[in-house]
Image (cartoon, rainbow, N blue to C red; front, side, top):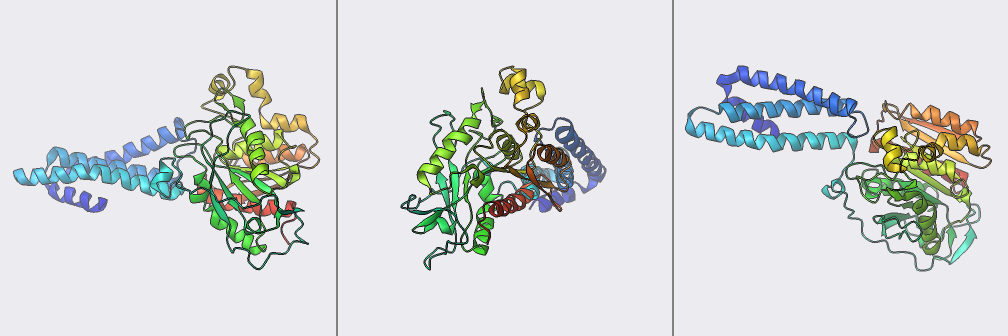
Length: 416
């Protein structure tokens, strides 16, 4: 449709082909400049543009140039000029939508319009009838799946109130493996999994963009229905907010994740309680949170899965972070840096970490060896993973988070 509109405009203004060629070239140059300035200089999205982003920005601006020529020059005759201008006007939204869809497909971020608006369309979770009817701490060698065990896990949205933190979280999503849906279910390990932060960010991104339910079902199927309970809470309160998983003026996100969420899980689900049976995981900003809470609360999370995270909590820059995130308290900001926390908390005698990024992630990929080195120096047992052909996108996140869950299953002896 977009291509057809552009061809019609160019055909109508064929006598002004020099203007059209100039508009296309100028548009492509403007697109290249905008991609560089907004993506690399201003860093408006927090990640560098991919080549797909850069090419499509140029294409969209070139199409807009064609539309401008059509609107100004028109076609031949009064009726021709009017029709050409209508088609040129139509080309503007078509170009913008086409470019947006292409970039979104490259990033794999918003499978639906609801995801783009940050609205969860995940139905409420139907909890198991009796979360206390378990067989004690999980032992994969002794537990056997019953004949009536479901073939797939179950997921849905739940409200986890911020009773202690007073954090106003949006609904969380919980995935229960088949082993959690039967009578006399074992007490299963828990993975608290966090999305990133940015336009449309929400727990549903993990399920929709990361295709996590299907990935987790595949994992459970290979292990006779056994897998961790995966809880996907909201650590942001809203997509544009970034409390940085600390307690501060932007929200008591840390207390919410380390107190309110575990309390809800223990109350409503048959979950293991030992720190070694709990992991904190996340992608991008969520990966940074995993690093922070894994380093800072080994008594709560014995393992962490950091996918494409930053080296520490950050807003626009250091000064902005201290001002808005820590009430101007520079000492509190320094104390919250996870590499410092790792150094001061060493030795970590029973903590493990899975640290991953995409091979093509030029911004957050270099963070991986720094975090890995600091964690190992502090005594953490670390597994490092670089996802081939992966950038800072949900392809990388989905692959690495799923592999992180499998890695955690070995730690908790779920894998037979």
